[in-house]
Length: 91
Image 1 (cartoon, rainbow, N blue to C red):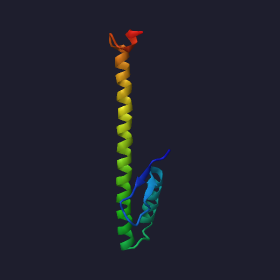
Image 2: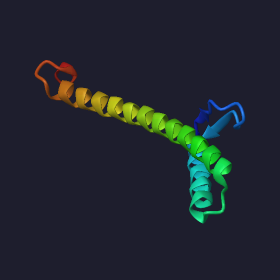
Image 3: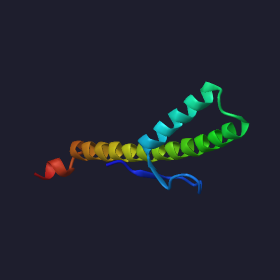
């Protein structure tokens, strides 16, 4: 299940998934690359993009931390099974 990310901007939608945030970032990049955005629109798009980048980075950090915890738990389990007197020796 996709987690919802909260934007801090009151004008923005209150919740986005990581995938929706990335999709919106791609739209912003396309618009900026087109050269058709005026000065004010460019500023607004850059601000929105910065917010989305921050949201995505925070989500990636959280997922990374979760993966590190899982890997650490797996390593601890393996070490306990290999250690003399560990759970494997109790059987």
